[in-house]
Structures are given as structure tokens and as C-alpha cells.
Length: 323
Image (cartoon, rainbow, N blue to C red; front, side, top):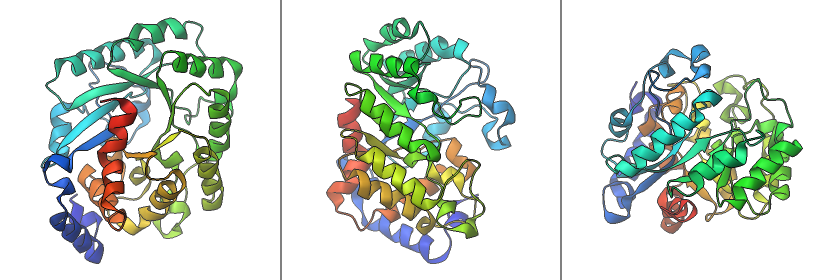
């Protein structure tokens, strides 16, 4: 499925016009895209239990060569994002991504690894990678069925996230939209840890446009999500990753304007210095090829000052991740 099938009519024409008239995505020195949410996986090397029940499009291997093909024609560097492997494979995944970064032959410059902050041996795990220079943070996916609501506020979990701060690593929050208030409470309890809110707080475009389909399980109303985003944005220093939301819309049945309410509320709430782009490839394929997402976001932000666009695409990520 190509971009024209996804972004039809005037929206597609507008995107094409914006791209042809703007140098920020053309390969000029300021054209760099830093993708802060790059997934890679090889099922022969890592165990990803969640793939067993995933849609067919995700039950393939996705390697660096595939990633480069998806970004063909664009100047991209990447921050790897852990892929929710079985906990027994956390060390294997982290060792592999450190080696890939050191190798220097791929666009991957640094990584956010997986881990379990509530685990008894969490600090020793963190110490293993904190000094590599390539590991910038850690994530535990918090929206899975096996994770109860409120888990991120348990004393053991909070202590683990505080540990990350002591080792100058950030924590990336991938939350249910109904638990964004809990995210704000977690941030408040960890003043020395830097945070990233992934995927626009899992804002669902369908909550703004029911014509796209029914909301996701455990989704919330648009107003509830907005209040949650505002609560997290009120916490100083938290970054918001503009990513993930295209996976929520039906392929071929959406336009950039359908994503705009989620994107724009995050941009306005967090401000131009606290947002950055994430591709979420290959998970984005649930709703769009990667270029469809890039082009749609380009259209959404086209009226904003060019300096703010550049912060979104690369400058903020460069500063936050130190790459």
C-alpha cells in the first residue's frame, strides 16, 4: 500500500507540495531526522512473546537493511527502542544493541533498553550498561494485559526508576491513556530522573473522529486524554515523543488531518523544546508505511515556525539523548 492510497486527494497533494518546497527533508545539512523510536528484531536471536498474537504484518524479521529501505531518500539517524523481549533476553538484547552502536555502520547511534525497575537485581543490571555511552535510558511497557493499573506507582517500581536517575539514565513511559495521571505522579516521585512520554500518551485519533472506528480497549475520551497529557506536561523536563498514533488508524482510511488533534495538543501542551519525532517502525505499519507517517506529520506541522519544526525532527533529540 503506497502513500497515495493512504493520504488521498487534497491531503496527498498538500503533502507533496510541502515536501517539494521545503528543504528540511531533502538531504541538506539541516535535513537530519533523528528517529527516537526505532525497533529492530530478528526472531532467531530474540524471544518476543507478544508477536505470537500480533497481526501478520509484524510477524516478520525487521533488520537494519529493511529500516534503511523504509527511510529511503531521507537523512536519518536512530535511537533504538527495546522491543519487549522476554525478560530472560534483556541482557542479550542490550548486549546486541551496544555492539551495533559501537560498530558504527548503521544509522543506530544509541538505545533505550528493556528492563524491570521493580526487580531485586535491577541496579546491578543498570550498572552493567550505564557507562557504555550508548545506553541512554530504559523502558518497561506498562500497557500490556499482564501489567495491572497503577503498577508504576508501586514502591519497588518507583525505587527502580529513581535508580535510573542516579545513573543518569532516563525512563520512557508507554502508558495506557487512562493512566496518564499516574505517569505524572511517578515523575513527581523521581525528581532526579528524566522522563519521556512515548506515543503521545497513546492518544487515539479515533477518540476525536469516530468515523475512523471504535476506540481501543481501555481507551478514554478525548477530554480525559487531554487532561492526562496536560498533567504530564506540567511536570518540568518531561519530553513527549510524537510517535505511535498512526498505528491506531485503519490503513488507507485516514488523512493527516485525522492525526492532527493528537499531535497538535501534544505540541502545544509540551511546547517546542520538549517534543521529538519517533517513527515506531515497523509497528507503524499497522496503519501506514513509514513514509506515510513522516509525510503526514510534515503536513501537520508545516504552518509552525521552521525553527520549531527542526527541534521536532532532530535538535531536541540530539540534546536530550546526547548524540
